[in-house]
Length: 250
Image (cartoon, rainbow, N blue to C red; front, top):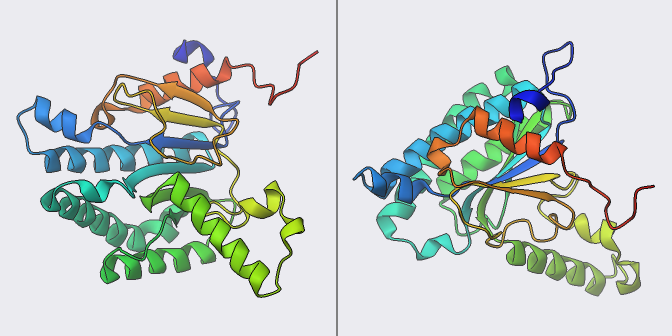
């Protein structure tokens, strides 16, 4: 089906694409365990998959890619595993600082960065500054770090309440568009397609506000084995969906 539906325009980009794809990068640990490797090897392989899939998304014409890199619950994992994930992120950010402008890739973070190590926060801030200099038409990757959907909504609610207390806002002003502007994803369209590899059939606290009308694609493929062909299959499935947004098509 993916091959049947994979049509391209004159620029070589795929047609009828979701503008925004979000992925729960799941299965790194199981991928490593199946091969008798430490879980950290799975995270390293998963980081390379992210790099490859992000490049592919950019090349075929997807505008936004949001990935679940580290959740608010992932701190429960072993110290060695958390450290390995943070080291991989540091490596990626250092490379991104050098290549973002050349490759025209914007990078943005979702999540509460407060508990993140100062060195990583400084690198994230540097990528934010580079992003500000790039065109808003460029491809943008959003990395969810120390992120949880409920935590994001709570932080937004607290900020709105603080603005009301200071006189900047009035409670009766609150509506969906205004509330969305307080979220980490402010200014970014909601994802049309959310992909979860690894065989799990749940959201795991990912983009709870933004996913209201997203289409979902689940696959048994573990994240390190997720490739361009699997993404094509997800997009092909998305194209077959009848998206009515609560209405009825005539």
